[in-house]
Image 1 (cartoon, rainbow, N blue to C red):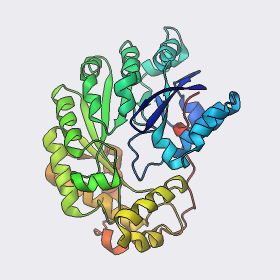
Image 2: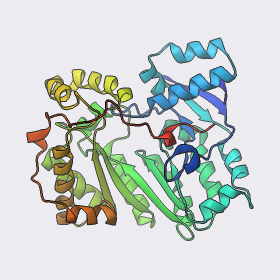
Image 3: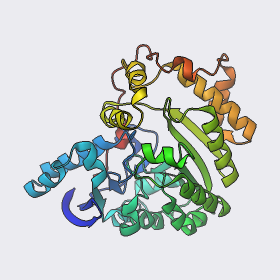
Length: 358
């Protein structure tokens, strides 16, 4: 990908990239879905983000293909974790490339029209502030409207997705469309401490309602649940009730996975905002990337019971079947938070799907 400085916005610097392809196949990524990421990097700067390595990978590969010391300096003048959210790569030709990749008769088009899943936003938010200016996600949705039997999933935490409700609702007539809106708390002040540049919970709830009223299926990703911060039962209940009232059809949740890429940034946030939790996190994540299995099981069971009581689906039917056949366990978030997960590897295998497209 060839890079050149394109524009600035506040403290963000945008770099235009000429992508060679934008549609990642399951074979290439090792994941069970096709994926598209119109941007590399994300301005929302969430403390728990797992994707900064994708930014570093794209920049290093691009500079290796086309050495440019001025660009190298612009990217390296900030720490890698900060550059990920301040130096955004924009694949300006993404809609045109996607149109070529999905031309009639192409194998990629045939695969998607057979119903293979396409995910937009596996390693970046496709509706981050850059989208308001560059409109790449909308451009690609316009390309995708011509496909029949498409199974499309979009992951975002931005209310900007409601701008495209016309395209999404039109696609529901001949395709399966599901928006996964990320929301881990409805407490505005708490959200600002852990997601300093992300849209407010209230704005996401408004977008959820607008999409739902237009007939677009919306699920909520309570991902990740942050131990000791967003896992209190009362807060989770407020969240579940709020998204149910706004029209969400299902909810998924998982605990924080603190990969090596995430650890430094997340612990820095703890030092600033929740210093009293640092010892517990050091213990809980001392030997692995996840909290212990008892905590994870307790969270799943609590969320399932809560969603059943509120009247909203939790997880998938396969998840529900597995849950009902398992032995019951108590709600153990507080009890087991500080016990490390046994036999956990230092870092899990990184999903290849999160590598940016060429």
